[in-house]
Amino acid sequence: MPRIIWSGAISFGLVTISIHVVSATEDHSIRFHQVHLEDMGRVRVRKYCEVEEREVSNAEIGKGYPLTKDTIIPVLDEELREMPLPTAKAIEIQAFVPVQSIDPIRIGEGYYLQPDGQVAAKPYKLLRQALERSSKVAVAKFAWSGRERLGMLRVRDDVIVLHAMKWDDEIRDPAELAPEGVELTDDEITEAEHLIERLSRDDLEGPEFTDQYTEAVAKLIEAKREGKELSAPPEQEAPAGKVVDLMAALKESVAKAQASRGEDATVHEMPKKTVAKKTAKKAPAKKTAAKKAAKKAAKKPPRSA
Image 1 (cartoon, rainbow, N blue to C red):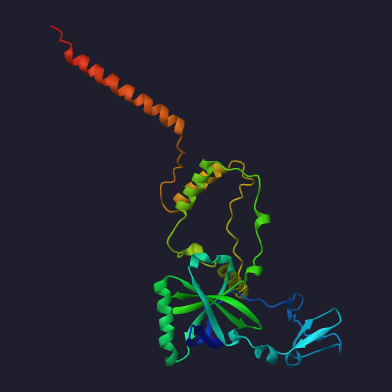
Image 2: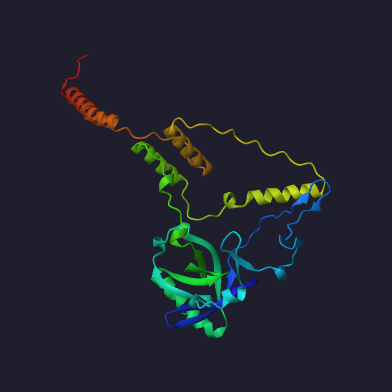
């Protein structure tokens, strides 16, 4: 059972739902210590007071706001907790919107919201089912860790999930990053669409969506623990280098995507409108000539012996 991160309530109009917040994700990354390579001694970060020139304990450490270079304003945790914010103890729902209206770049870490006891179970289920039927998500405000945040509530299976969100002013404007002076042909865009179609799927299941790096690190540690020889990494294909012909690269990518799915990997040619028109004009002429020859042969009398 994951530990409870925060306890409070969801405020839904005049309805209050007592909830516990637990993390919705787990980190399975392999962790390393910093060590002194000569003797494998642990290297630690020590909390040091510059004024008294000594190491201090966590109990002696608090928060301070640097007003100027030489002036620091102390701020106590108790003062932050007692601030008159309605969101300090509740997740206040502000609006319901289509999920498509929220830019994914604003959506952050996810947390499961668990009803706190049987009394909260009914309004919790009410909100969950209302969200499902409306096909919308709730946008809320809440205060954690000394700051007010924006959040999105959605349904996953039978549980309400809270996603932390960025405020508008926390998203950088990407306008200056967009490339300028680049022209594309319709054929290049069409070929890119072919590649997207070949790589489309309905789920994210399969070996290509596993953490192969963590698996490799685990094998490395196991081999070193047992004193085994480290296996040589598989040879990687050399990068193709600078792409000169974008269309050729797209067609080759489509062929590889087809081959990986066991499909016919023949690289299809883009239709050429001019050739198609010429062929369409010549075809009827051949058919008419064949019909005339057949009629002439039918009228011609047979040769005598």
